[in-house]
Length: 230
Image (cartoon, rainbow, N blue to C red; front, side):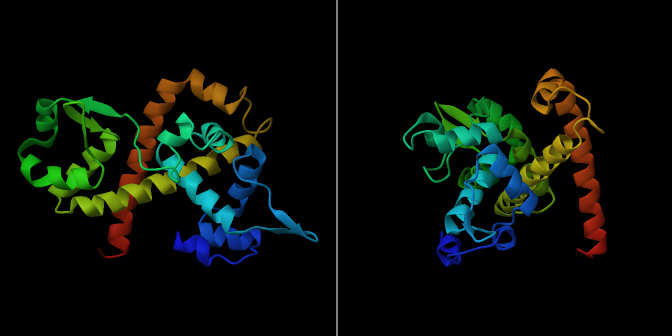
């Protein structure tokens, strides 16, 4: 938490955005949803503190665990010893989504002949957890990605770093996309409401998002590797 302690007593919205890594437009959106407290005022200027930096960090961490903004608001509004906090709030303690659960044979099928080499690292980096005589895999897709990178020569610890980066950036991108939809209401977007429409076409949306997002990420990694001469 050194970053919070090092934060100035008074921050502008621009400074808060720079310190937290959350765009100023997204900060305003979080205010409108009630997940981020309103700033104080110094004349006409909005004034933020280290508490706002900490709250934004907590929001990002919960989004990385798959929690939606309406549920994140419930976390902050509920008691600190409530169920939501025990499961999701990074200020409360570590936890993971249930994800997939497999028996020992199922885990061996997933890991193949890598098992002896990678299992300790997968456990250390949170890709796999011992669970009720078997194994819990919080994010199966992330585990698959880690194994692909391992086969390419990347340590599991490096994959863990990339995993955190992906979740954080995707969460911020998702917020920006929802904001764009909301701002386009009655012009470019004529649906009912974003949550309603997403629920209505959930399966089709998820399939399209995986295909578009996965293909885009892959092509951008290839581009960056070429341009940066990695």
